[in-house]
Amino acid sequence: MIIQKTSSSRLESFDQENYSFGDHFIDHMIICEYDNGKWGEAKLMPYGPLSFSPANMTFNYGQACFEGMKAYKDKDGQVFLFRPRKNFERINKSAKRLAMPEVPEEVFMKGLKVLMDVDRAWIPYGEGRSLYIRPLIFATEEGLKARVAHKYMFAIVASPAKSYYTAPVSVKISDYYSRSASGGVGFAKAAGNYAAAFYPTQMAIEEGYDQIIWTDDATHEYFEESGTMNVFVRINDTIYTPPTSEKILDGITRDSFIQLAKHKGLDIRVEPVAVKTVLEAQKNGTLKEIWGVGTAVVTSVFKAFGYKDQRFELPVLADEDSYALTLKKALVDIQTNQAEDPFGWRELV
Ligand code: COI
Image (cartoon, rainbow, N blue to C red):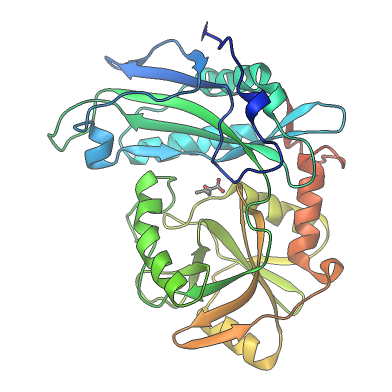
């Protein structure tokens, strides 16, 4: 790997108390270029802008996918990545679906480790704090012919993070817009999936909600995801989450929640979640919780949901009675090395 470090860190001038998600970046980044059918040597270099023509194929045809992952610092200053190999596997699934070259494991894993090592001082310590890491692959070729590009870049940038949502949010169950469709790219972390979600989300915000619960494109009768998260519903003492499919992102936090719930002996079922079932449970008082999970948010508790023109408030539970918050705590304790890790999820760097 080529190493080119900055001689002047920006850490001193970074206000570690006042910042918001994704607004500040650590001193360095990793880049690796793909050309002539192969990946070149990866490079660690100072974080900063790169220059591309407006005719760049990513800007025009959207060949771009990314990952979201985190590094945590424990009280002794040790740094851990959380299940990084899962992100490696998923970025390549996304790349494959977008007809982009898969990134070699060595480039991905070594890039992460070198970056964490060089910018260790940037990794925040404390409640809700982590370093959010964004690996991405995108086309770099200039050209307007609508075809698969021949040149790409793999990059890793990272940003100090605090809790994403601090308060419970309200969500609108979509009965019209879809996040994904059969045969589409819903399972991939394709940049375009996020772009396509913005307009319906804006519509939901105008109606007084924070996020959307995405339903299936064919019938809008089944939950798929929520906002940029996977979704969980608790009816009485049973937790439900929809099975992943070509339309649903195979979330690493989702998988961790399922494993943790099983480990704790909770009744968790991975099965289709019908809007009708949720509405009935709301009506008869058995609907206890709905929440979203994802790397950035970890867990977002929902306080209310809307369906068509009705709005329903969800029960307010004490933290210890909430499955969402109990599982969140168990997960964060593992991520931050405050609890045993029986699953082998932490990776010391
Ligand atoms: C993540 O949780 O990593 C995501 O992908 C959400 C992000 C779009 C903020």
